[in-house]
Image (cartoon, rainbow, N blue to C red):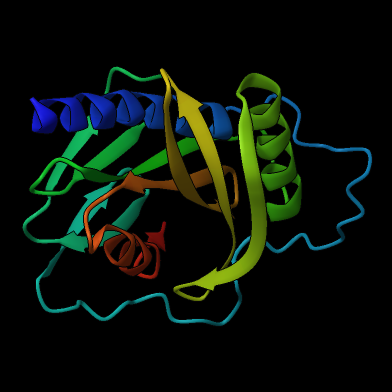
Length: 195
C-alpha cells in the first residue's frame, strides 16, 4: 500500500510536470517591457557541442536535438501533447526527465523567452521558492529554473533548463526521487545538442 501511494504521488506529479513543461514552453508573448536584455545570441558561439558519451549512457535523437540518457532508463516520445515532448523514465518509475520543444514564430533572446516562460508559469500555477540561474550546458547559454509546486496535496521540486536556438525553445524538465535522478538530469542537460 505504501509503495502504491508513492507511485500514485509520482504519477500525479509526472502528469503535472509534463503540463508545466508545455505551459512553460507555451509562451504567447515573450517580450517583457522590463526586459533590458541586449543579448541576441541564443547559443554560445565557437563551441564544439559534441558531448562525451558517459559510461552507462546512450544517445537519443529527437526532433531537432540529440541528448544522452542513462541506458537503463526508458525513452518515449509523447506525440499526443501540444508540443513535441520526449520523456525519459528511471527504472523505478520515480524520476523522469522530459525534453519539450516549442517552434517559435520569431527569434527570441534567451532572456525574453525565459522571462515570458516564468511569467506564464507563475500566472497559471501556485509555485514557491522560485530561482533562476544563468548557466552553460554543453557550451550553450541557458537558464536553470527551480521551484516547488504542490498538486493534490503533494509537493515536488521541479528543475528546468531553458535554452533557445534560432526559432526553437527547448525546456528540459526534471522531477523525481531516485537517489541518482538529479545527477542523471544534469548529465543529460550537459549532453544536449541542438540542431
